[in-house]
Amino acid sequence: MMAFFWQGALLLSLLAAVSVFADMKLDCWPDFVMLVWTDSRSQADTSLFRLGNCFPTRFTAREAVFSVYFKDCNFRRMVSGDQLIYTNNLTYGVLPNSHNAPFTHPVVCAYKRPKDWYPVIYEPVFNTYGQGDLVFHISLMNADFSGPAETTSFRLGSFIPIMASVDQRTHQPLLLLLEECLASTSPELHPESYLYPIITNQGCLVDSKVSRSKFEPRQKPSEIRLSLQAFKFALGQQVFIHCSLVAWDPVGLDKTKKACHYVKDHGWELLDNAALGNLCDCCDSSCKSRKIRSTLSGMLGMAQDAVLGPLTITENS
Image (cartoon, rainbow, N blue to C red; front, side):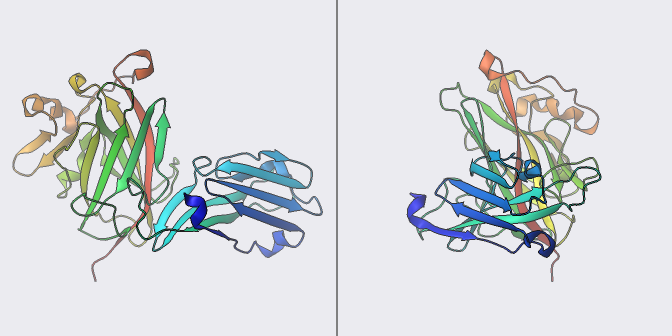
């Protein structure tokens, strides 16, 4: 179990203006973290602290306490060398006319990883998402998709192998699709975010029109593999890939539920059934959307947003 490999927490210094009258205690456990922020002079409104997207578990006039699991609060998980590292940010927001300054403080828990231990599906960040009795994954893989990626840095023009999957448990067999993927320089999308479109228009791999990106042949319906050619976007910076994953009835493919890529001198091709290739005809125009219907009510499918990253694209030397 992870508890046997617990190494401890790495605590980074606070901003000097904040730390004079404040103290932070961080305890890392196998699957959760306890963080206590204490302000000896009550300079801060402790209700305004956030750990990732989580509110304090409890707070007083001088103390904010978070007792949360790594699967919550948008913790990021990275495998680096012989370490398994969970990271997040403790943030403090301010009210109008407040004399306190907002700040962000990194929170890091590091564990020693056994040499023979790997996640079932490699995740450079914590990117497993549960919805009902479906569990979605998205991962960076090695070149032949046989195991986890050994790096999160990719040369411009090389391929970034990405695999997404869904654990179906008690569900009838479902087909996994990537409905939309956008690259951004931030882990959260905002109206002002700098974006690069990869998959748009309900499953059209638009990047394949200007690159060698493509969907790889399926190994099983609940898994989809994408060979994404590293593109000229935010070179040298952290890049996050935001995707909408859809688990869908395999016999329910239509213009809004499909996986299409562009083949030079041939045109758009459907990944799953060549006989239905006309479903990709709308990729150069508009593929009308349809409301997702929940599997929980016995309908066709379920959608889940996911984020992959950070990764880095570098120029060729």
